[in-house]
Length: 289
Image 1 (tube, helix red, strand yellow):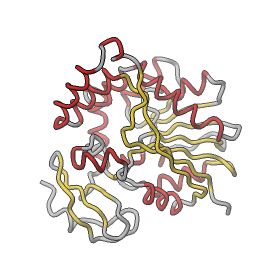
Image 2: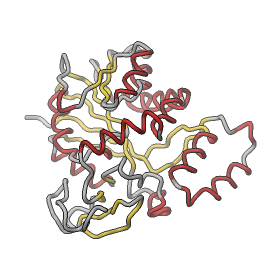
Image 3: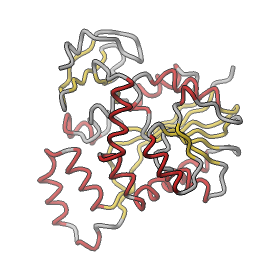
Image 4: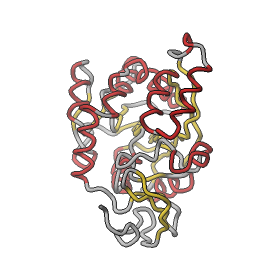
């Protein structure tokens, strides 16, 4: 379907063409670069393929379920804001990949000057219904009205076929001492190592690259950022919602998920639990000219 994964293209991080095939999932080969260790789909999906896929997902797929889970989105947004406020300088915030605006809403409620951009029209329409300042735009086509103190890009970088020019453009928007904050799956996490190809974040073509702390630091430094800090984070999710998502994303784990649900009293299913899913929070600041 996709041809020879090892003979098509080069690593977007180090430029080396040689890679080892790790496995194929959903018909997409996953390879590890022999130069830097970045795990990627090869060949990479085209921009058009990804845009069509993401629009379908928001309309009736994985993202639609997340967009509809309002309480879940608010809890995750509040948790991310809690992590970032102590590190953030004063000034405007921009959320990249804002989806239907949950983080923008929480930032505005905290008194911040915040807006967002999102490529999926369906998600932007949901945000606009709530009168949130979320604009339909790609990073490549957007110009913020003023320099930014904080840029957030939650669960975004792993979706970008060519993340380096995007991050380099974001760096140009930050004030000196500004903060860039990312969340993304950690392919070196315990969850990833234990589950292997069944790890729920190996989901193609949604996720085209899979970073480790070492490779994400290299990417950010290549984009002109410094003082990169990486920490493991947990995601607050109700058990009911988390098990439904695991059923969908990791069918091989479905029997274990059902056993876990049976072992937990039903009254706890709707309570947010801080789950170690294998994610990392990464922050960086623009390098001095």
